[in-house]
Amino acid sequence: MAPRYSALVEERYEAELAQSAQVLDDVDRALERLSDGSYDTCAHCGAPIHSDDLRADPTRRACAQHVALDRA
View 1 (cartoon, helix red, strand yellow):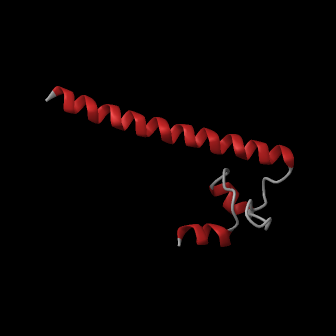
View 2 (view 1 turned 60 degrees about the vertical axis):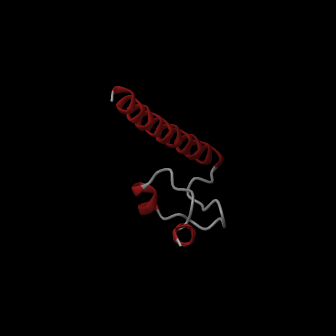
């Protein structure tokens, strides 16, 4: 029984590690956009990203329209 438990723990660790790496990548991209002046514009169409949306998610790269399209 111990090997199965160990496998579950390892799978969870790998999933959390991947999620953490994604968060760091998102923060790096946000910092790059801040440096080049494109932080508050949509990466898809160049439309503004509202400051409330950026406060809710500082790594957001898309305007409200493109977020909605991505969810559809």
